[in-house]
Image (cartoon, rainbow, N blue to C red; front, side, top):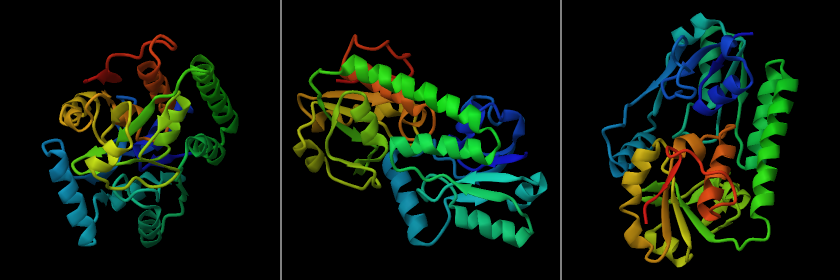
Length: 294
């Protein structure tokens, strides 16, 4: 079976299921594991935003969407040349990856008959469900079941470690200029880590808000987890957040690795957040995962 992944989280799932030899195409953003793009065709491109600050990225995204433009480019001919059996994509967020409809239209135009699988989880439980779905669609349901069992066991370990402890009020900032609330599965991560999510939209899309509204939720802890940034970028942005939350702890988190990509590493995120909220109850995460700013 020949697989193509059009979103980084799906690539991570494919590798976690031991299907890397079957993966023939990825996107320019697939960077986990580090070898993910080493011998794969890159079939989705996009603008390199590494030199832009959050406000510039936000302006670019909004202007593209308002004009009906695309944030990603599907290299359709390259995709057709790979002759895939299964293509993993999504309809969850136009800012995160190509929508499945665009992929299906391209395949119809090219005469390809690949099975397009859209992975659209809104909760942590649904993220685990996407692992099962990928396993079923790729013929390795037993591997998926074993992986899910292992992830659930780790979540249960965290739950036991933080059980009975006071739950700090936690606000997660998914974008800083302008600020966005935590949505989708992110509040679930906070709950699983022993916190009480505030100013959040569990199971719903993240939305733009204001610093005043976030501060009014009176968080004890603020996690800065900007989409598209690893820890260094998150830490730089978190320093500008501190002034909005006097008296609260402010932490920067590697958002791409631990929070915003709906794949197996979300459990790493739960463990890292639990270590910040309840020191000493779970093992200390690697220094590249999370760091306290204030």
